[in-house]
Image 1 (cartoon, helix red, strand yellow):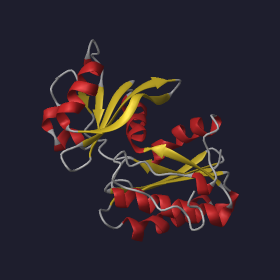
Image 2 (cartoon, rainbow, N blue to C red):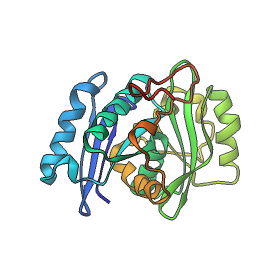
Image 3 (tube, one colour):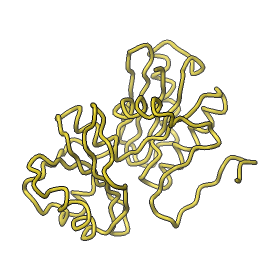
Image 4 (tube, one colour):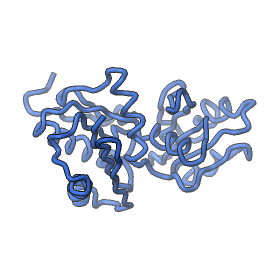
Length: 234
């Protein structure tokens, strides 16, 4: 599978390229500079691999949840790249990416990813390992911290001594940290496109790759809408 994945959903901006079983990637913490840094990072990995965008099989992007502006940047950028190459696109959960990173770096097999959604809420999801990939249990949600504790964290902690936590939500809302049994991975605060590669492989195998006019960002908040491509308003 030859694929390029981009993510700008948080303060981090990242690009990952897999081509002929080799991986190339860039990752930077660059708040409010995503639109300036993203294309140069794409160019850098393509040059490092010695290939053209048209040689790929698929494109992927961090579909959210995350910053409204950041998710829009990635969605708009992937639309442009897909239109220029006629490649299919796979959207990937930013929360799942952090859970996957916890597994690949720390061998965590059950993870709660929680990122600061502002407005006194967190984006949160509970993931469990299945065949080398972190899979969502239930639904990704945006919740006030107290609801996140009662609806997701405490049920997951029940009888589980090896639950890991990732993301900025735990630091932003210390009330989430109710149990010492939860292992917080302080090195995983933001999603990284590199750890979306495994997720993309599974999604593609399951037939989840879409044509460019079908892709949708995921905000979790109903207040935000996304403008489709011109002429694609249905």
